[in-house]
Length: 200
Image (cartoon, rainbow, N blue to C red; front, side, top):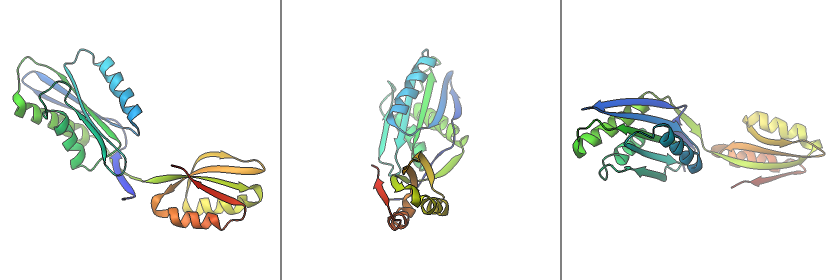
């Protein structure tokens, strides 16, 4: 599995108009389905007078978890074109929503595909695309005497802390880049009184 993935650094927006209809696209960097559900619920509340809230999302570095939704538009005319823009930029951990205010004129399936594709593209063009590392969480338990050795390994690999507790027995949760995991694990295993548990 690839140990890097692409996402966006922050929220971004795009707009497209056609024959009176307004297509407001919004892109959000998100980490879980729960976050996505919350965001969609908030947008439905905020833009409750809009005709359609069409969206596509993708999660995970393996790019396999995704969902598309036409929200009442003709099948394949909204969610799929939005998702196509996510795919073409190889993005993940992202939600793109396009909110349509109907202008009174039917655009036809071709017109809708163009509108949803263009508005989603506009939002993603405004976003800063960043590369992130695929990381694993490890739990580290060690004695206070091993503290200096453990800390020097953490510094050497520039590991990020998630949780920490320092008493007579110390415990840390660390984020480790997949690429470095075998080497980091090997180094910690050589430290006396140090136990590693890989978190799922």
